Image (cartoon, rainbow, N blue to C red):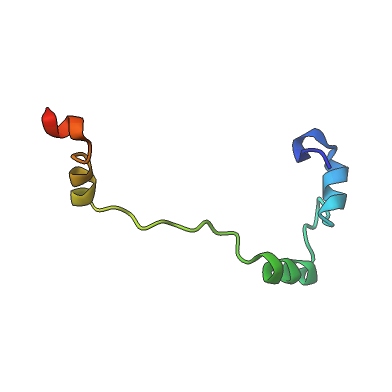
Length: 65
């Protein structure tokens, strides 16, 4: 299977079992949601400003300067 951007639109639609006008039917959408989960990225804990500031001093050269 080649990259999707190298394929014709109809080929990609067929591979994903979807319709260009209607999209996924409800049953297929439910099935994919159960199989793959929600389309969300996992977020990392954000560093506090103080932590970012203190991490600047990890390098020995920075401490020397």
